[in-house]
Length: 310
Image (cartoon, rainbow, N blue to C red; front, side, top):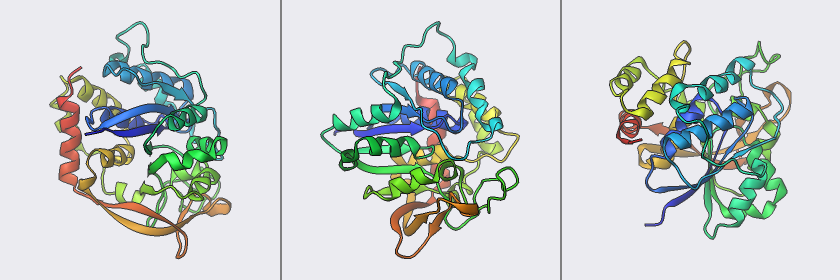
């Protein structure tokens, strides 16, 4: 059976690195390349950490591209600094040199090159803002036909967003961060005919990183990927933390764990509601992950981190 071709685009948050790990444990997936957007990170350590993860997993034939795009509303520095910490975790620094190639192209051009070379449509897994994908579409609009679907961690449909109105100048709490970072980019992708599946806060709010999960993870720390995941989650246990990106990535691995629902939507690009994914009759049709089998999801992540041999 032919493997599912995937281009992965992430933005260097803690869970983006764990999504990277999970994606490469999927035997049915062919990752064609990874692009990193400078959103929830500082770009150089984020790219470095991503390449080191591929080295840790002994991945060959996959390059990582650095994006130079810019968003409208920057992530707070306190979020972005985790990229430095993860890049310096001992488990990722056992070798003197990084083997995984850094793509010579800027990430949007990298995506265009990959998609142009494919005979079959490709899934784009996006766990950060859509800016890099939107830039690729602007460079080469014809690649739209090469994209089978976009699976995106983004949006809040019928729940509050997660953008702090105090920190963000009166934002009305309707926006989710990956949309808020660059609302026009999300609107650009919404203007295409590419099928879009989102993993919104409506679902992720019900899938926390729990103490029970971390205790189970701790019992398998002798497995290198479990150890790495434990070190990453240790950085964020002081706050409410959810499986935003990992849950989205799990859909690629086991779509049967999920139910989906269709919505008609619009991306709000200006004002206090900028970054809102508005449910609006007559709007752009998307599908949203609606429910997940929690027991199967948690077990799947633990199993993936346990079975992989490095």
